[in-house]
Image (cartoon, rainbow, N blue to C red; front, side, top):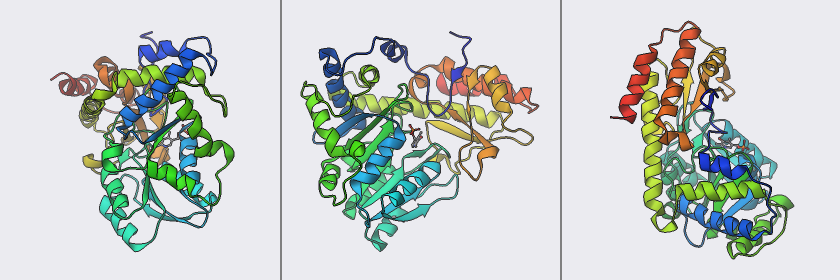
Length: 395
Ligand SMILES: *Cc1c(COP(=O)(O)O)cnc(C)c1O
């Protein structure tokens, strides 16, 4: 087990032992009593992890983050309506393209790679034009940039505009309080910060969001239609089976286990989530302390909008993507660049999910990155980098 390189890309990620075991079962029927109970409890668990209100509606559908994004694009906005898209990287571009295909008039608020878009800028844009909804990427995985989700959700509320946040690289790791902030949709995929294998699209809608679907003039494609899925979710939560399209039953068993590791009981969800976010913050601080020792520069331009879930790092002078192989050789799989303008100039290290509670995994990653850099000729003090991270993790 220890010879296996750690999977430290920004998703899929290392999962906990309990989640791993939960995936190693014979496929359950979608109407089996145990599956129904697990499904219902997973939906309740989502409300807790999202810190969403009792009237919110969680959805679990086989698919990925992109599918969750597309349900939002097609259920919140009618063709001809205007949508504001905050674009902090690759996934903002994708959301804009989906909305254009839906026939929406898209206004982009763009940030140069590494910079964020402030809630003030969003507020100004909302004052200037009439929009049905605002879409933002909580953490853009291509840049490692986080937006002020709270400020943006509150600005949207003030203007009576719906807000939708892509939390694929953030949910269950970065602070997000759906109910308190008045955010309408918070969506994610199973393989990233929430810590499961790939295969599930997950999102929670406010009552305002499901009302917006009810008011649509142009129906969404059948498989993306919240109105087709909502009765299924309601049935499972009420302890009854129901069918629209077969759920990913094995993954739903794992989702149930994974969510209950995060929030064993719904009453104390806020405290548990606060601790989980703090653990990600500490892990990110530790990794950044190591990167600084190694002379690596972060792509985000300010620590205040740097994600806690991953590090996007410029290659030092004289180093290119060939270092990724050397890092894997040294014990950790990390990812190349994703942003079209900068792809070949940086790489990404994920630090989210179960690993944030495993200092030895984080330190092994630092050691692997430092060793890989040395192997390709960069001057790197492996020991000093590990010590810098260790002093944050084990003060
Ligand atoms: C990975 C990712 C997506 C897309 O998710 P898939 O499961 O690959 O479809 C969307 N948004 C963000 C922020 C992501 O990190």
